[in-house]
Amino acid sequence: MHDDEITDHDEVRFALTSEAGLNDALAFPFVYAAIFLVTLGPVAEWGWRWLGFELVGKVVIGLVVGLAVGWLMAYIAFRSRQQALRLAEQGEALLALAAMLVSYGVAEVAQGYGFLSVFVCAMAMRSQARRHEFHEHMHGVVERLERLLTLVVLLFVGIALTDGALEHLDWRGVLVGVALVLLIRPLSGWAALAVGRWRTAEDVHRPLARRERAITAFFGIRGVGTLYYLSYALSEASWTGERWLWATCVFTIVLSVVVHGVLATPVMAWLERDRARLTDSSP
Image (cartoon, rainbow, N blue to C red; front, side, top):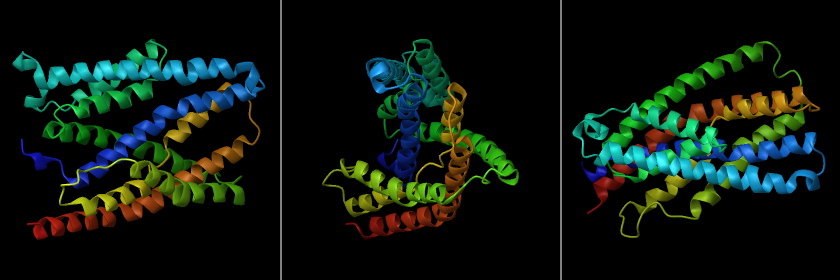
């Protein structure tokens, strides 16, 4: 395979997909913290339990399971001695779904975080033969599945909008949604990406990396996972202002879908044109 099989456009999409997985993976400990605060009282009553097991223990279990499953899957797909098992050569992109289900199931049985295990498993597989086009095939399968499931969820969100989902939305909820989409998300994303470098100093396309970081920082996930976590939290305890929480959550998702949906295609097209211009002008 050629080293340029995976393009800069792909790196932006991989980064956004990875970030979505990491967000979902790391949200659960803090959901539990909120549930414990409501059901168990002061932090002194449950703080050490949460820190030791919910935050550290389950995270470690998820990491270990994800690494083990990811390494095993990658070894089979790329380096197995049995040609029939080297799925990368056969283009069996459904391996991505198998890895996702296995890592999630094993982690949950082991009392770890399944979402975190799936994320780590994906990163472990991605690190093996990084430039192999098989990663692009697996990403395409997962992306199409994600779009389908997201479309179904957004369909139900649209139905909820017609049934008064935003009835209890007030200026506070609007402020929270706008701040998350236009301020908190871009600034936190840029700060996180600015810590590392995507390319070496010798890379002739280094100026483009800054634009990639800006695009990745701005285009966040739609927040559909918030529906799951909010549902889980509300099912575990009684909360005040439940309708306001739902309204704020739905408003933020709709705002993200509109803003990011409208801008995604022209921005990605501009990135590709800029990439081609820099490539043509490089010696």
